[in-house]
Image (cartoon, rainbow over all chains, first blue to last red; front, side):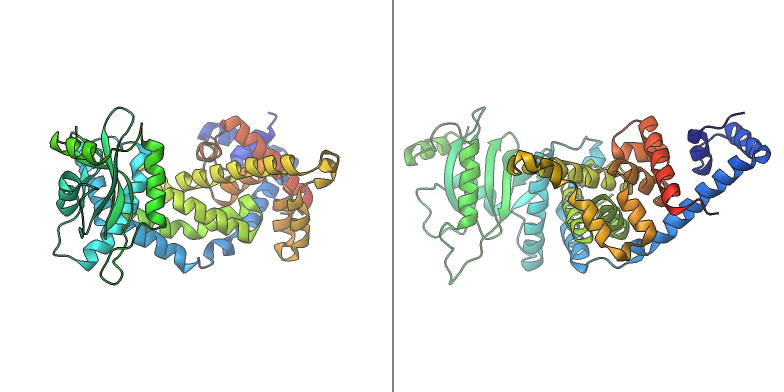
Length: 237
Length: 165
C-alpha cells in the first residue's frame, strides 16, 4: 500500500482508527523509508515538546493571577450563574456581562466594607436590578431637588423604545438604570465615587463618561425638572 | 461552575496561555500583551464558555482571534502610512526580529520562520497535544486545512532541523 503524508502524520498523531493504524504499521514493517520517516516525525515531536516545555513551566506575572482572582471572587457573579443554572436558562445577552463584572467588583468592595448594609444591586432575570437605597433614590429622588443625598441623580432621559432611564452617581456605584417590568435595570455600572471632606465630588471624569454614554442612548432631550416630576408621578412609565 | 472556580481554572492555564501567546506573536513582550488581552476578554465573557468543554481550547481561540484582529489592524496601518513605493522594502519586520534572537536556538528559530498558519497548527497538535478536531476548532478552519498546514509545517521543520532519529 502507498502511505500518504496525511496518513503518516495521522499515524504519529494517533488520529487513525485501529484498522488504518494497523495498515500503516504493516506498511512500515515492509518499507524502511516509511519506517525512517515515522521515526523522524516522532523525533520531531519530542524535540519540539522538549524545547517548549520550559516556557510552560515558567512562573507567570503575579498581577495576572491577582486580577483573575479579584474579578471572579465575587458572590454576585456566582449567584447569577447559579440562579441561571437552576432555571436552566441560556446566558442572556453579552451586553450586561461586563457591567455585571464591574458591578461585582463594586459590590465586592461594598460587601467587604459594610456587611450590615443591604446591597444596592441584585441579580435579576435579565441582569442587575437596583435594590435598597439605590432603588429608593431612583424611584423618588428628582435631579432638581437632592441637596445632600448620598446618591445623586444626574439626569433622566428616554431611550429608543420609550423606557425612562436615569443616570446616577453614588458612593458604591454609578451608572445608568432604565425602568422596566422588573424595576430599575442597570444598563451601565461603574465604580462609585467616594466622599472627599464629607462632601461628594462634583461631577468628575467618571460622571462625564456616563453622561456621554447617556447621550448615546437618549432619544430627544433629557427631561427638565417639570417633566421629571411628571414622570415620577406616573411611576416612571 | 461558579466564577471563582472558573477563575482558578484560568489561573492554572496561565503558563500554557503565555506559551501559546508567545508562539502566536513570536515575541515575549507582544505575547504577554496578547495574553493580558485574552485574560480580560475571557473574564468578561466567561459565562459563554460551555462547562464540560475544554477551557484551554476556548481561551486559545479567544487569544488567536484577538491576534488575528490586531494583525488586520496592523496591516491597515501599514497600508495607510507607508508610501506605496516603500511597500516592497517593508517586508516582515518579524523575520528580522526572529533572526536577532540568538537565544531562540535552532528549534525556536525554525518554528518562528514557519508561516503563522503552519506554526499555529504545529504548536497546537505537536506541542500542546490537541486532537485534529480540537485544533481545527481553535483555528477556525476545516480539519483538512489543519492537516495540510500541519504536514507542510512538519516538512519544513524536518528539512531545517535534519531528519534525525
